[in-house]
Image (cartoon, rainbow, N blue to C red):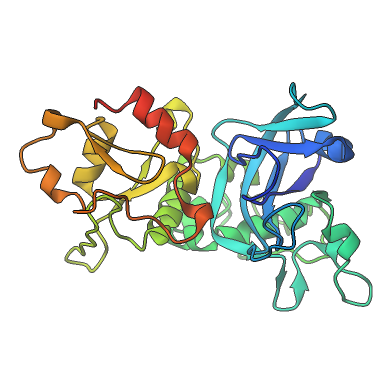
Length: 322
């Protein structure tokens, strides 16, 4: 098993939905097979549409997930799918650039002279050392770690006399993959244990969704601040977590408490084009007046941040009472 990087662009010709599947040609089968049972990072390249010169991609690692299995594409010879383990997709509220402060986050992308190895950069699937994987994850979740507090990241039962542990993800390029902690220190909490913790995943999802919608309710258009100056908006899953809904930005909406309640109960929904749908006389009196007068969802400007039709259709089919 090995960590890897999977390159994904929303405008590509491949049938990708990173939170659940990754579509790739036979060229990368051997590398992808090494990642089965292990974790991968998803990277958005500069070129946003395969076969064209259209650019504008963020050139960042934006999420991590565990690969469960690989299967051939039943419709296209020579193509394969890597399927993600349900419930393991973790979005990065702080996407990580491939080069930060002049340093390459992936050592394999750097030539000895310090320039970018374009040949390596052009490979859609790349094997990644464990230490580099942990450092990138640490950078992507830095704000979440600060928000949750030290108890989620500190070593368990560290002796009072122990030296302070290195920050999570603080690796040097020459670190061995499984470097031991200094004598007297408790081992660091395993990375996978932290990535699969519900508390972390909820915080990472909420942080990303609220930022994408500028902490404004997508259905009412209201941005209400509480007494402490914090926005009263919630991050709602379109496909619920308890029904294998992923913690992906495209499976999320920023909603006020009332709009969230109506959405979860199928009193309102959203069409593929962003139109807000209502369940007729099932709405509580006056509830419809809360919705935006245009009856259209307030969408993020970036296409990659907008709700995916897959999740919207499922909500209309299985939840909506209209």
